[in-house]
Length: 311
Ligand code: ING
Image (cartoon, rainbow, N blue to C red; front, side, top):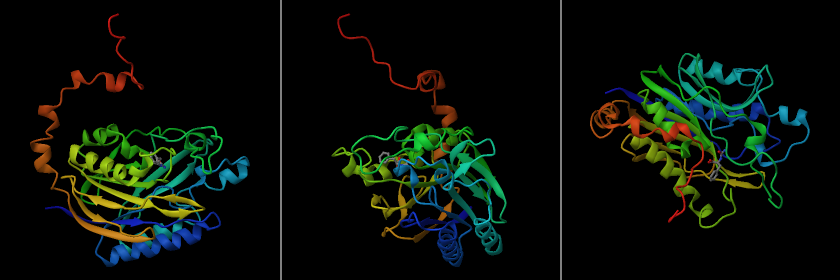
């Protein structure tokens, strides 16, 4: 039994005025709490260093750039890496990345318990829109401020298991987990910032929390993997975001769940061998999957309807 003691560190709101060093202090405090409970890995949210800036139309490029990291670790985040190495705990961290080529990505990294960056992931599925919608209090401009990820969905052997990463909206797409499942993933780290009222549509908006867990529980079960979902939540600059951070077993069962909308650490002893029985039976991909029947999944992006009746 390969137990990976894992923490999911939910964050409450990050104010626009909050400095990176303030966020790092909060992350370090939760990292220490995770270590005090014996954890070897802690998962932080998506965009854990700044407020969720895609809720606004930002015209000034200098202001927009101020939300991105141009180096990782950088002057502020170095303290998080140093503390992780001192404590001997690995972590997943979500942040806005600005590359030397001036490309913008919604990014996460996986750092092992020696403080080494093991892997990087860039969010593939960008929700929302590129131009501000009239009449909305809050926008959702990730398609304006980020490019789709260009790294695919890799997995890495680290901390005694096979770990993968995803970010927020990725969790709603079965392809995300399946590509990692086809690489034998055993634990998916995933941060999210999920505002209520994303579409101003009822009953959909009222089902935000249900759809949050439904997406992750389905992904976990259908790929026999642990899923650790860390929210940034609460009312941030007037926008209220979903919490209910969660640690989900390969069975699809929730084994730990946050109960506040503040900084909160939840933990579980993740047996990385728990998925084996599913991978050898119900979800034995090699003997049950029929790729020859799945062509449309990669051949087309949008649905193409069948011809009208009686044609
Ligand atoms: N946020 C949201 C998410 O996928 C959203 C966008 C909210 C989509 C509610 C659908 C419903 O959780 C990010 N950052 O992707």
